[in-house]
Length: 266
Image 1 (cartoon, rainbow, N blue to C red):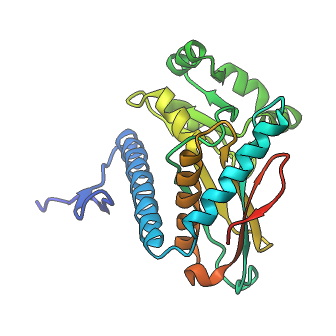
Image 2: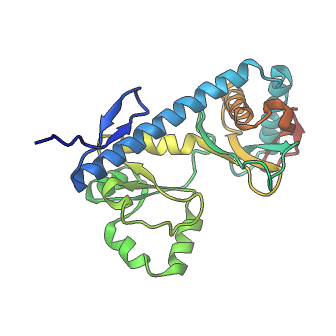
């Protein structure tokens, strides 16, 4: 009797083909593990692209440092009652959003730009307990079931938080009800929840939509100037790596604090 070989799938973490499991449970586990490996590979490629673009960067370090110093100094002088966020504002050129492929990419910055970014854990019993100890907002399975049929509550929840994390057992039950850009990030019990929260807070996303401008948070006025500098460099270099003609597609770059004036850095 001829032995039937299991289907094969390509592993992005290596150059090998691996046998695809035949049982339903095993296939689900395989798919989740495969997605995690692919996500890790994507982050690695993102950092490599950013470093490559950095080697050919047209962003002048002295001008950038001067702009950052000016922003933080003015913020201290004004003595705001809150910590101002610093945003990188980008203008593009030679791009047609209707014809050209719209890019999208995320990169983890060296330092968390918005420490007070609101993250919510959609968790099983173990993750709910961990979230409670950390002081992290959370929702359990029962709360999610009640909310699932109430569109107003779902919309309110999506507006309240910047990002969501979800347990492996729960993420399968969540449809895309939280809206674009808010689909939860998977957290397993083999990972540190605190590390995952920090990773989420340190990640920024670049996405070309219908207009040739965008903005991302790259720091705050309570950070060291060196940290802001490193975040801006990583953000710009990663963005350039996404563009079809790299720096030829960059029209202008500005830095701006929440209440401060706009400063051009490119």
